[in-house]
Length: 294
Image (cartoon, rainbow, N blue to C red; front, side, top):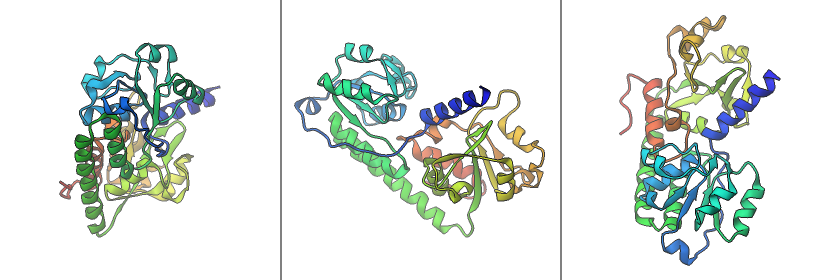
């Protein structure tokens, strides 16, 4: 029973913080879309983007996970991430509902059946964010603001990528997403892409999965230069727990005390307009003596 609860906790943690692929349905050219529609956002990353492009005043509904920016708190909650209340949603009379994924796709079908425009957009990689911003700009009637922000993020990502290429040697990074059981990100995951932009080499890239369970022995054998913990420990800090784990004292990151925690997960793991801040935060941990990208 405990193992089942732990697996459910991990799945919920990943669902709340990470995107699960990028699928963009065709935009329907309707009169409502042109007249700045009333919007319900069903994902925190989308809510951030909607506010970032100046369409926050069009948002009439959000999920309980949509906690940024502060102005989002004034928007009515219509359910949890991926699990909206259809009754609450329809009571707001939205013109447009935007989601990244639903726990029950039948709800999505019912939304469409009610004649409400539904769009699905999500980001699996930081590279997808500019395109999603542009799409949201067209859907909300804020094309100019969205295109400007998309260009700024594209340029920032290009700068980080170039700086990573200029590094003589990349440091290896172990991203500990959870510690009971141990989970990390594999090749193709959003977190792996962030590590790459920050000039690191994700040790999980040897596995062709987005996220997967690992053993302590596996981490010890990989001997990472940097360890980053993406969760909060209940008693002592996550970093202290890692530094004091039996058998981990041979790992380079532990010996050099390059073990970090207390990351702002909403900043680092949530695909959105603050992606460059997340990459910069990680870059400063991996290369504290290097000048970060502007």
